[in-house]
Amino acid sequence: MKQHLYRSAGTLLAATLLLAGCSRDRFHFPDQPVTDVRPGYIALTELAVGVSADLETLSSGSGANTAPATRATAEADGTYRISVTNSATQERIWEGTYADLKGLGAPIEAAPGRYTVQAASESEPAAVAWETPAYAGQTECTVVSEETTTVTDLVCTLSNIKTTVELSADLKELFRTDGDNPLQTVVSLGEASSLFVRDETRAAYFAAPEASNTLTVKLTGDYNTRGEGEEPQYKPVTMTQTIPDVKAGQWRRIVVAVGHADEGNVQIVVTVETWTYDEQIDVDVMSMYAAGEEEIPDYGEETSDPDGPQTSLDGGHDIALPFRIGEELFDFDFDPVRCNELLGIVSAPRDGATVTEAYCRIESENADLLAALAAAGYEEGTVPLYPALGPTQYAIARTDAEGGLVVKVNDAGMYALYGYEGSHTLRIVVTDSENRRSVTPLTVVVERGTTPASGPAIEGLDGFNLDMRHTISPTSPIPAALSVRSQTGITEFGIEILGGEVLPDNELTGIGLAPKMDLLHPATEEMAAMLREFGFLPSDGSSLEGAREVRFDITDFIPAMTALGGTGDCDFRITVGDASGTTVKTLMFTVVH
Image (cartoon, rainbow, N blue to C red):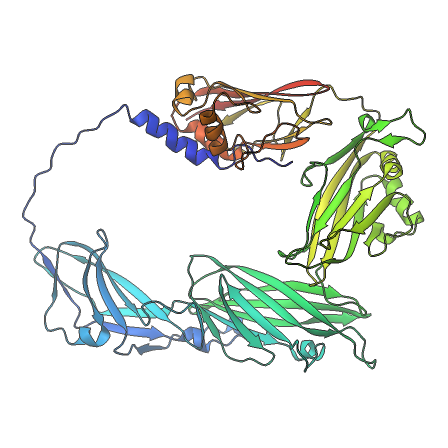
């Protein structure tokens, strides 16, 4: 069971505490005398609005980096929308077309201050459209009382995102030219998408709703799995690649090609050239898929499709935390030995798809385990899971009614793993019927000779040291995350906040909390609501009681500890209990300013 306690609580707590503290203060400012300020004027009759189309004519082939484009600016046509806005108040004092502006006979009256003069070809560019670039630009000026400010030049550049897709000739040869599943590429930004057919040469222009956006490139078609000279055999494939940090004014030139084809292997790569006004920023080359001669293209070992199967552990274990195997897991009074906590892997495909293939790549710091895998015939530590589990008596694999995969390591398999001490990484690779792949790492830690636990285990995560006091300030927060594990399920979970001058008791009670709180049984429903609000408890209302694994993460809560301006120690004493006993740990902080 994965819980992110205190998630994103810092900002909310800081705001609540500050509001509570500020309610006791009142500020009074003396009235300022009002003076008679006479207006100034903005002269726009000499304004020349230019449009730079450099982006449309840049050469992006070989040598483009060493051959920067020259600026070529043409005058905007009369339909461009012009506006003049007060930069401080956002009041628009004039609006019209470029043609209207040319007809102005006198300067525009304006109060002294800063003003923004804007020009745009489109009032609101379409979400996506073919061959429809939008341009915009702005300049600022300052108006002085009883003086005339003349604005002369304003240059508009691309304000949406230009996108082109090119498929190399050798790539096209790998895909069927007819049939119901033609080779095509869909580029999407949010809900907007544009379909590029096999030989599309046009550009699609996307509106940029955010300062930084993400494009998704999805290539589909029927891929020939046979080699040259053989009778073609086609399989439908779907390949997906995301392109982050896409901004207005950029041209994203996407080229999909075959990277290399040796010894029957095919690697398909995506090259993204990024151009902005008058310069090339970078060239991103990304491996999209790798495929063997008799296989359809799929993801590389380290890459997951965002829509691929979701892999997790059963039994309340968080797959992001280490799965620990120690003596306490086994009942040695039986022959063969029984394991009280079996490792179970569940992989669920999305959108009605089914699991078609799965395997596990095992890496280990224990050379004996790697040697044993090789001796059993598992090359490079790769153990097939589905559709053929492979020659093993240590686990079972099956699909469920929804087409998902269930793998369970049995008693013999758990005891066999117990024989190899150390840390092992299991990389679980699952592919679904839409050829979407997910790669999920799982760490298994074997600790031989350990004694049964006396209370839940509490350990620092992500480098957080539980045995030292940490100094924090408004400008130097730190990550603070713990792993809480119980073999039998949590029966007690309490927190005592020793806030001192940093988080005084009265400030805690003022927002519905208390210096001591029982997270399993909050004192009131109001307190439970606040605990959920701040992330101490699951937002869905579920309980921590009975959980076997909890990620206790107060990283986002740390900045709130500096909100009231107090200095000194601020500690969190955590008491967690289960059937085996009780464990107490203290997170220790010192706040400085």
